[in-house]
Amino acid sequence: MKRITHAGGVRSGPGAVIRRAATAEWGALFGTVKERVLRRKFAAVPLATAATALVLLFSIVQHLPGGDRLVADIGVVKAALPLDVSLLRTPLSLYVPALDLPVWGALAQVFLVFGVAEIVLGRRLTLVVAYVCTLAGTLFARIAVALGPHHLLGFPRWVAHVRDTGPSAAVVALAVVVAFRCRAWWTGGAVIGAMVVEAAVLPNLAGLEHLVAISTAVLIAVWIEVFGDYWPRVLSGVGAAASVAAQGRTRAVGV
Image 1 (cartoon, rainbow, N blue to C red):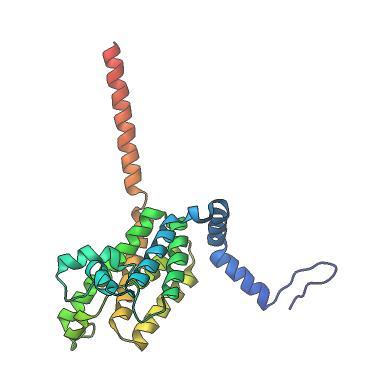
Image 2 (tube, rainbow, N blue to C red):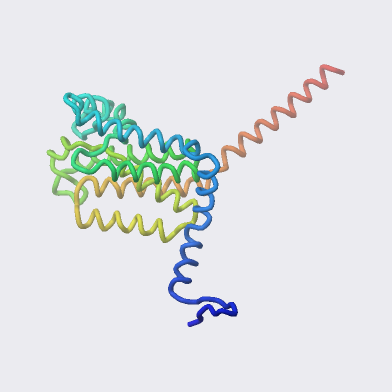
C-alpha cells in the first residue's frame, strides 16, 4: 500500500479509504449543516430547538405531583382511546418522552435529527414527515390490537392500554428522508437495518411502529422525488398565465 513520504505523495490505507467513504456519504450534508449553523447559530434550527424544549418541558412536568395526569390528558395516546381523541393528542404525543427511558437520549435525538432535517428539508416538510409518520404508527397500533395476538402483526388487547408516545418514530422517519434526499444510502440502510433488527429481537409495539414509520417515510421520500416540484411548477404556470391575462386586459382598456 502507498504511504505518504516527506517528498510528498498519496497515502493509501484504511484511514484514507474511510475518510473518502465518509466524505462521499456525508460530505455535502455536513457542509450544508456546518455553513448554516456557523452563520446563524441556534437561529438556524428554531423548530429543533422548540421541539427539544417541549420534550424537556413534558419530561419535567410529568414527574411533578399531579403532572403525570396533566400530561396524560393532553399528550398521551393509547390504542384504547377513541380515534378522535387520539388524533387530537397525536401532535403533542410526539414530544412526550417515555417514563422509563432517560430523557437525555430523547433530547439529543430530537435536537440532532430535527435540526439536520430542518436545514436539509425545511421546517414545513420536517413537520409533515414527523407528524404523518407518527400518526401512521399510532393508527397501526389500533389495527394491531384489532387483529389480535394470533395474527403475525397483531397484539393482545392489553397493549391497547400502553402509552404510545415519544419522538422515536419521527426521529427514524426523518433520518430516512434526509438520507434519501442527500443520497446517503449507507446511512439510510443502517437506520432501516437497525430498526428491522430491533423489531426482530424485541417484537413489541414500538419496534413495529418504527417499521411503519420508516415505510411511510420512504413513501414520502419517493413522492417528493417524483412529484416534489410538480405543484410549484403548476402554480407558477397559473400565476404567469394570470399575469399575462391581466396585462392583456389592461392594454385593452387603454385602447
